[in-house]
Image (cartoon, rainbow, N blue to C red; front, side, top):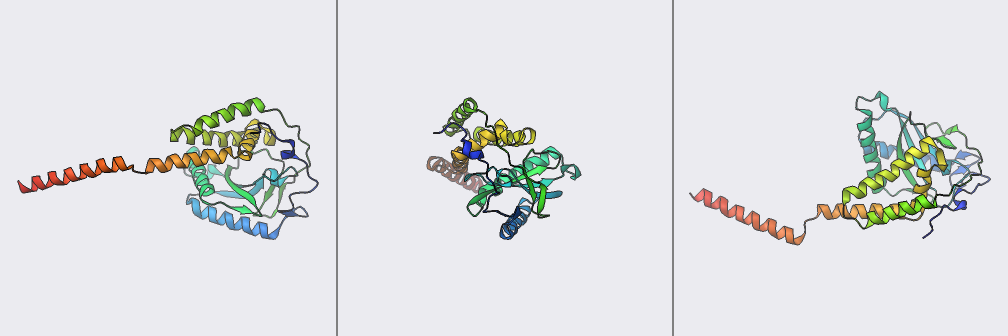
Length: 253
């Protein structure tokens, strides 16, 4: 298993991803589909939302993309205008976002679409930001030749922790660690941008399918927790039968 960030992952291209863009504008069919996805998501969350904008950010809104780059679709909201506590509201949003991404495997021309809910005050550091509501650039990307830092030591430690989680039957611990990886990326992008440690680690794990393995393991544990084993079912059946006999005896008195 590769344990480093490939330089081609941040290869500088002369044009934006041609699958999505033409003459630096989002292709009409791509814009239409992203708007359809957005409407479906807003219906899905069933929560009050003060929507400011819906933006594409990240690698596919820049000149530094590769075959594994996804479409980061950010719903920019103003939580300060909500009557619900901001922290609680963001937790509810994150839960709904995770559920939507899990239940709907969406891609555009083979590029996965990943949805996020971003507070307008979070200030994500990004090279490019394109509004699909306004169909224009909020921040035009600039060609950047990245100097990729060596994260091999941190990645080794993270992979070791991931393997530990894959061998764990503690469903809550697995879920907590997955959330931690996503939060580290979110904070990293906000504070340091594309070259933040949190984002680089996240991309490396995603490219090696480790994130998907962790999610699959979590849902496997979740399924087992909701299942009733045969041995337990027999015990429950016996208890139910004993209770019915007891109730019959009570009625006959």
